[in-house]
Length: 78
Image (cartoon, rainbow, N blue to C red):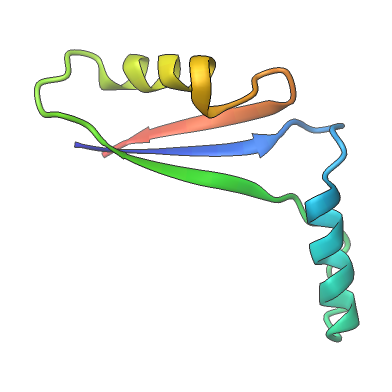
């Protein structure tokens, strides 16, 4: 079974990497980009038979995969 976790900085948290990408896009002639938020995607292969895969992946996020003080996450099981 596959799980995908998308981790993004929460609204209001400064995103210097996103700002650097926005600036670089402007320098390359893409003037229509007014904001960029950069995040990460983590794909997990889970063993079959996991009783509650979404709860297990959420626990992984809370303990390791996301810094919940400044980041939010979304879990997709499929």
